[in-house]
Amino acid sequence: MNKLYTYLALSLSGLAISASPAIAGPATEALTNCVANNTTGKDRKELAQWVFIAMAAHPEIQPLANVTEASRDKFDKKLAVLATRLIAEQCRAEAKTAIEQEGSESFEAAFGALGKLAMRELMSSPAVNESFTRYTKYLDKSKFNAVFGK
Image (cartoon, rainbow, N blue to C red):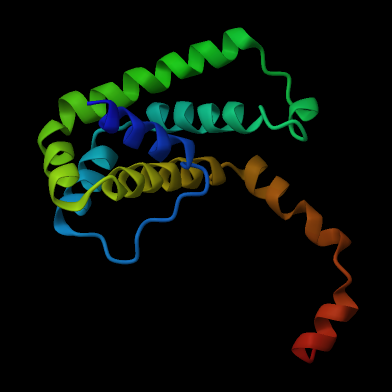
């Protein structure tokens, strides 16, 4: 049982950068679909907030974010409720089959796909999209034109 908790913790800790395996087996695909289909936009936004809070713990990021210990606890609890609901309740059969047939990578793939859904939802905000493209005004366009022949 401790192994299962370790798989889940590692899957969630790599959520922000997780890449799904190139070829997911049918059990992993079933778990991924179940996880995606059993989350709401609110769930995915809270997941993205948890990822942000977790990343804000990095010493170089910490000064940019004002994250209190109370906020960490609040979002850790929300993520625990979400993971429990998904793995132990709504996607129980799929999770059991995926771990037995395809191993811990199935959790990484499922929660990686959920992270991508969360990011897609956040990116749909015009303010976020604009923020991600702001840097382009500082690009040296002449160097890009030299590379691409424009």
